[in-house]
Length: 91
Image 1 (tube, rainbow, N blue to C red):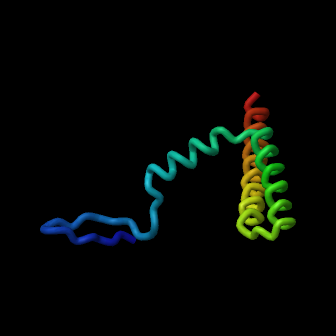
Image 2 (cartoon, rainbow, N blue to C red):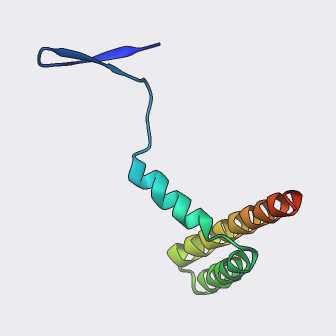
């Protein structure tokens, strides 16, 4: 389905739905390219410590940040595992 955006004296096609700006895609690609097993473990551990510190001190923001770091560390570990599997499969 093609929609049209009207501009002065010109009709140009426009695709429906949100599209990520190129800069965001490039930044995400650069960040994911550096994902490795050790980096994910470190961030996951740091997040666990932050979450525990937030729980002990009653700081909800620190606890949320710690939980976020734990999740990001887990994702980085998973990406590292996938990259290792692809590398092993290509041998």
